[in-house]
Amino acid sequence: MKIIVAIKQVPERDAQVRISSSGKWIEESDLQFAMNESDAYALEEALQLKEKHGGEVIVLSAGPERAGTTIREALAKGADRAIHIEADDLTQRDALGVAQLLAAAAKQENPDLVLTGLQSDDLGYGQTGVIIAELMGVPHASLILHVDKTDTGLTVKRELEEGWFQDIDLPLPAVLMIQSGGTKLRYATLMGIKKAKTKEFRKISAADLGASGAPTAILETITLPQKQKSTQIIPGSAKEAAATLVEKLKFEVRVL
Image 1: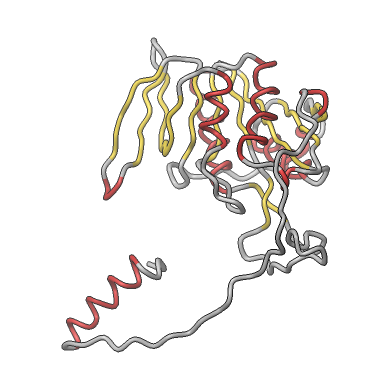
Image 2: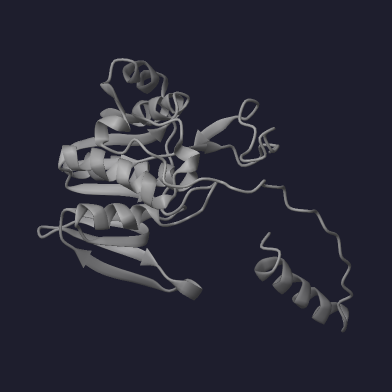
């Protein structure tokens, strides 16, 4: 089974973000970058499928030259080869523009399965994988926690609301959007890092895929959100107040 995994390089979650001098994007020169979290889970799912059923895992990523470090990380974890779509204007492309790049490159490989993360940590559109499926003309499913290969295609486990799950069958080829937390991520071993240096790493330009233009542009200056503080008195007994506080921390502040 040939599996393509689309990954994205994003700023690390705890990075201190500053607005660039142009006011149209963030200052990237002093940021540290990492693999998008849900994309890392998509890669892990692909590697486990390969270990069970054989085949090939191909990493596909669009972005500037610095994205190569994240692609090498994926190769070190066990991907067989990589395709890097060199696109310095990725931040100016909406979900459709990025999906057009990835779908065009994926079609050239004629894969059995394409895996993406559920959404990116930086923009959070949650649309790219769905659009890739539409552009490729294949079925898709999102919020995937686990994938099993069957004689007729795939059985996938989806996470729904309020602790509910859904098992559905899909034919191949297909596109799946993987949810974070469905499995345990592996680390790149020293041997894997050494092998990654010798694996195929193909670079192509957006122009080679017939998608050289950027369809969107930021017209207004962007700003950081304003920090606000507020105090709320919770009425009731200590037991009642504690229960209310836990509910607020879970569902309003979302820190539990």
